[in-house]
Length: 305
Ligand code: AMP
Ligand code: ZN
Ligand code: FE
Ligand code: FE
Image (tube, rainbow, N blue to C red; front, side, top):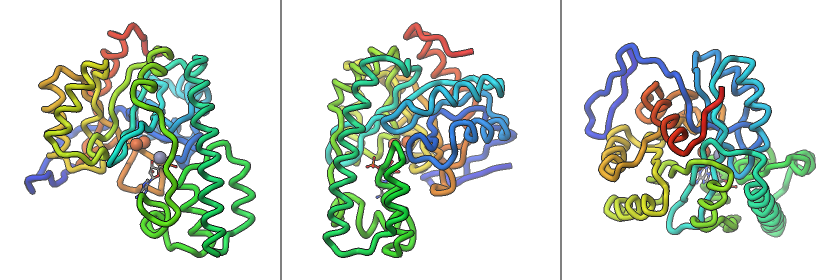
């Protein structure tokens, strides 16, 4: 039997429960370790029957993942995770059930990709100016990737001998407030919502504690978001304690919002985010899959197959 400590220090048990879904995952199309096909294979090996792929600022992995999921007999939910302009913390918006070929979505992704490239160039310049030795073969290899984020640059700093681990690279150099941090151009919330809507998707706020605001402020934001048409909250995420996630669920329920749970699986780089499991190592079970499927249906989107 699996168990985990919740925020109150007591133990939460998951008697006989098995994960059947994961609703927040990343592939090598953004900063995940596995290709979309390998991600689907892993999901299948774990016995998952529903998988959502939610890469950062890209839909490049969706067609491959969908084909692999069809082959594996797994229900596939095409998604994306978009960063929103916000202070003081990070605001990530999930878009579920999107049409990857929507022109508005494609245009927004192009803008974000251009901004990301410019930002990466600035970060690399700052590293060079600081006189840190960079592994040029890795820089060259990176330049051939279609998506480069700070996690890739962190790995570059590690392979160049400037940091011990990816986390160490963030702590020393790349995290907010550190010497090589450069603000990323993000979409304003209204614009991201319009883009997701025109791609036929349903928005949900990912891991709300990363916004880094008080619970009272979160409550006000939840109410505002509801009015703006955001009806979903990813209440369960492995970076928060189970008890804290249960509080988010209650806050969202009070406002009639739907709940999702995800692992934010990226591969080995984030061992705490195991595929199919969320806060407190809780298996992502049918209730979460059903709730998202209902929200997609209500938005007149039918989940394939
Ligand atoms: P980017 O979109 O290029 O700014 O990269 C954002 C990603 O970097 C996030 O999704 C996290 O995976 C990772 N990240 C951001 N801040 C940190 C941090 N302080 N420590 C470790 N990883 C981080
Ligand atoms: Zn990521
Ligand atoms: Fe995120
Ligand atoms: Fe994520």
